[in-house]
Image 1 (cartoon, rainbow, N blue to C red):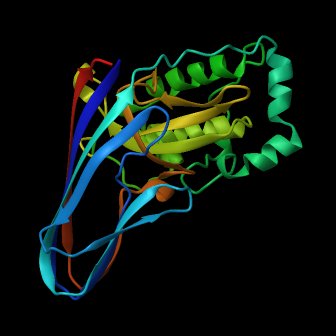
Image 2 (cartoon, helix red, strand yellow):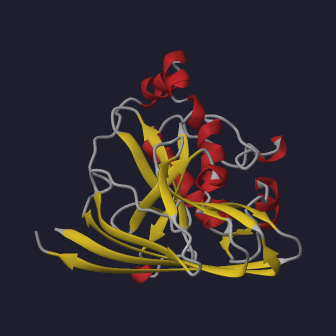
Length: 286
């Protein structure tokens, strides 16, 4: 059994004064892996600027545009169709000796191999007075602790659109207890890394037909590394494991590695940007 998804991504930029030149990078294409297969995509803009396809440092597809004609507004639209295999996110064996398992995470070679996703970043750093809010239970295995962390973050923050920015620090989030999916993902990542568990920030799309919390733009969750299992997805915004409804685009250390759009604009004055995403899914027989 598999699920077929159709995704429509839209962005619109308005500028106070004409833009002389602009460069954009879009990180919005669903990733292809053993669980999801991209069948088709189209990408267009209202100025008909051509685009190029490239790969970023983590191996994910990016769409790049160079604009050298003046404009004061521009719209972007992308369509994607893909199939995703249904999966059981709990389909693996748990470690039976929590102490031995945790020792393996502290092995020097393991830490060197996974260093990028153990590293603190400006978006995944907590002040000392906030770093002990969640206590790791050494009598339980890593997966059980991560489930507890998933629930803890879900209960710690109230999902509230519009109250934070892309550069809002975790200490502000912890003190105010309101945020969006990227804030949930950053907090989960910061605490997992604090205990020596590699964790990466994931951006993508969420099929919200089941009533999940998620942005009307793109969603964010995490992937933590379980020894002898691999990367397992956790969605602290909804207190679930990532599964059929999560469509991965990219991963990185934090939001800065996975921003759906980055740009350099040669212009002055103010600008406004709006985004929207629609995800439609239906079951397919194999």
